[in-house]
Every structure is written in structure tokens, then in C-alpha cells.
Image (cartoon, rainbow, N blue to C red; front, side, top):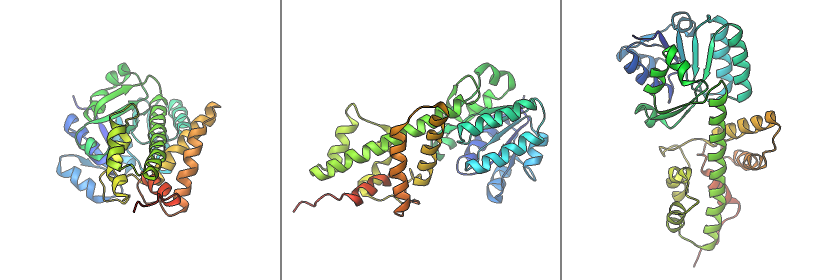
Length: 299
């Protein structure tokens, strides 16, 4: 039996997720500020809402995929304010842990179930239903509510982390690790440049040794070509990296834990912003180090 489901936010990640939920559920009410993705969903059989309020009024389960913290705060506060007891709000956006707890408190007061379910994986994986989802709830709760099949329609793996906030915390920690590892890669690449070690040799050694890492594999083309623009399919702007790192710093501050490595990475990414790298890929941290400390060219 289909769940009365809605989806708000049909962007780069939201649109392919909405397609998979529609396919699995057979019904979906969608909302977005842009007409084109709504028309695409309509052509596939989805219903198109006039606005978010209609989704809130008509749906028992509402998925959201929103671009930044400010929009998350605005949209989710509105959904909670206008929502009803028993509704599920499943937020796939990357939020701050602090805001997540504030939203949970407001939702609990109205008997609404707020479930943080951030995702990992790009648009291609989203379209293939191959994402990794970190859900701040138990598997049993998601099964009883009818949300589980919808989550599983967008994901290769759904990690049920037990309670609200755990999913988002794990996403924040994953982001912090990937950006920190990328910065460590950058320092090692710079040293290899200065030693005259060919990039391909360096890459092959690292990726066949104990320090192999996925982010280096994903960003190889950017780094090898020293080209960090939007043309590469793995493009993710340095502004996003800085946002992710600051979310991790806020979490560590809330926990009362010193996070020296994260703070160091923030300083370097902020320098990249100051030097005009804000629209460049996150791997442009390599380009920044190369610019500041160029290797001598061999004769």
C-alpha cells in the first residue's frame, strides 16, 4: 500500500531521489521553486504541489533535500509549525548538529517525527538508487511507519543509527574526514612535486599502499591536470568543503573537544577563498599549495 508521501527540493540530488521514491511508492507529491524539475516529475506520474504548505497538508511522510543551512531552517520550521502529530519529516540535507537538535525539540513538542537522513554519493549514484543514507532512527521505527521502503529505494545502504542526530553527526564526521584526508593528500603531492616524482607514479604507489584513499581516487583527474573547474563530474566547490568543516568544528565545540586538524584545514580552505578559489573544486587545495610553493621545473 502506497504511503502518502511528498518531496520538497528537486535539485541535483533531490530530483533523482524523488524519481526513485515515486517508482517505489507509486505516488508522490512534489514541490520546488523551479518549474523544470516539477514538469519532469509530472511527466513520470508525480503530482505537483502549489507550494510546500500543500505537501505539508496532504502528506504523512515528507522528504526534503535542501541546498544550505538557511533554507533547511526556513523550510523545516515551517513544516513543523504547520504540521500535525504523527507526520514524518525525513531530511536528507546536510545540516548542523545544533540545528538538528533544535528542530527535533520543536517537532517533539507537536508529536511530529523529525528524522535526519543525510546522504553520501553524487547525482549519478542518486539516480541509480545507490546512495549511502545515515538515518537518525531505528530500523524498527522506519519499518512500522512505512518510511523504510522509501529510504531503501534511494540507497544501496541505509545505516539505521538509533536516534535523532546520529545520522547527521556521522555525515558531518565523514565530511570532516574526507576534507582532512584531501588536505593531507595535497601536502604529500606537493612534496612529491618538489622531489620530481611523476604524478602517476606517486598516485599508483599511494593507491596500492596503506595510505590509499577514496577521495584521492575521485579527485585524481582534477589534480593530475591541475584543473579545478566545473567541467569535471566530481566537481564540488571549495565553499562546500568550508561549510562542511565548519559544521564539524561547531560539533566539536558543542562536545567540548579540541579539533586541531579540522581548524588547520579550515584555515587553508579560507585562504583558498581569499585567493579566488571559491568557485573551484575542493581539490584545488592542491592548486593552492602549488601556487604558494611551486616546485622547480627540471631542465
